[in-house]
Length: 454
Image (cartoon, rainbow, N blue to C red):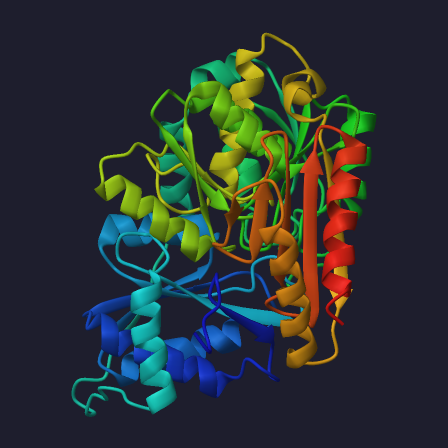
């Protein structure tokens, strides 16, 4: 696809992403959906209102009435769409820096659109082909109140509030000035936790930290946890569809570690887990220990959603899916990522641990070593030669390659992946093992092979 990537469209606001482009995307979506009503929502970014207005205008121009939801978390959008049967144009750039903005399209079932529907909408934009209404059929706009309240109520009802409340947890929350700034602290309080906050004022400039919840952006949360005797820290990204955690001593819990811990708690023999091709060995080991299958997809939420739906249609139970960046799905709840729900499920783990700290709860999944390397290239010809060299190396390896997205070699106790970046002129190499030397060796051998193609 030329416009839509693995999770919508994103770019620097008013340079790549323009009001005119958003208008066209909304007209195309409204045309393909052929719906009487379509919602428009946004996160806290400073250009959000501008693009939400453009989206609303585009939808009205093709005859759709517009429900204006305002600033709401992405999972609250999913809840609204599922409850009302109304699709949504969502203005958000998720974890990207404040100068970015983007568009996600959510179906009337509360789930991001599948690849085939996105391709139909994209084709309308590229062909400049829309079903414009005349002046008598232009859509009307209605502000909608209570969207966050309804979302919070259904989330709280979907988890074990009693066990969480009985655990008497103190939770430090860092919404990163994003769409969860109001909702997440409220939800954790209503789950019976004492809640402390940092970066919890909605502000699209993200003054306290950048939107992505990675260790270098969570120093304030780590200090808050360590100095306040909180049991756990929870951080969200700009649109609140991800959650990562900080342990009782202020140390960052890797997203692959928390994903594996939550998977171990809900898997049964015969289940399946869906994850991207850069999946951690931690999850590989958890699936093997529980007799569950691991299904790998190309990187990106859209691909994970599509494969999970296919498995569901085949009668396979998928209790958990996602990636190691904090973006975890619990399909029996909803096939979309929900940062506050992910946080609540992690609190259930702590509640079940009878007072054990986070460090002990995640210890069985933490002792792995991950290596990442990038090899830059000058042009497409050099990239292709380097990938050919990688393929030759893979073909001589004592492991069956997975070619879902690049080349992944699984050795049972370790893995290595090589794939071209989708956004930069780089070949990316990943390796992981419980043995640090083995992970380094696998990554080094692959890098030597890739560079031999220069």
